[in-house]
Length: 296
Image (cartoon, rainbow, N blue to C red; front, side, top):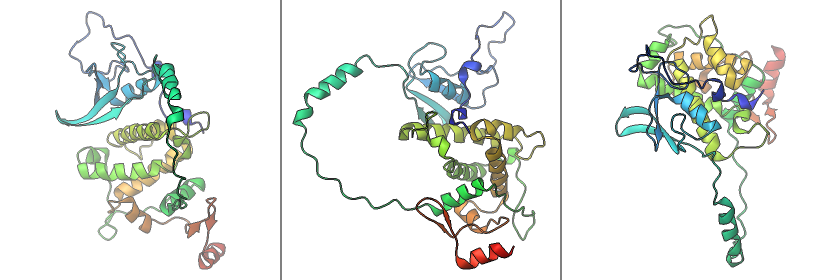
């Protein structure tokens, strides 16, 4: 599974923006992919706004220059609610700084004056996130949650893309689950060479992927027979992971639970999940749980 599939290569989609004489100048299309703009994005500082958010951020990850004017873009403003209410995605510059070498030499001259540091305090081992390790176990063994029927007793109900697009509550619910679930995939936290990426890059990449998946959920039926949603998400997660991801997301969205933790406590699989995990992530079973599994 390749981590470099996280983002579509924008160079494949950049096209000439000059239009013929019969082109409608008022058409609200993204100048990168020439499709209708679904989530407007504005470049900072040059303030060009004829971009779709996913296309623009994918482009800027390859080169931080504006596709229209070549200005070095420092941020992207998107998810506009009002002129003062929007989100900002900070762009890491790909343009080398001419002062980087002189700056490092300047710091070097003063390195002898650095004060001695206190010895670091011993750190306690990080607490294991059992819920996250359970989710990784689910994906490792390709466990699909049992279907729960829609009725008054279960309080499960069918949810359509239109329902999600028109409901801030359902969008919040979807974001909470997607954000937690993306932490499962270790390859999203590593660069193509296999090393861990910086915190800024990781956070930025995952937020873009979250916005991308949410845009899909608001437009595409997760259970459609043509597998359109699966095809889109498979570019980032791989085919098998994408199929299971969408199954679990659909189950959570149909459920009466708002928080992933509530769903975790009630979801059922073909066999019980481990009680705990050791320091290497290996499952640990209670004796009675192990006995039940062996008898099934």
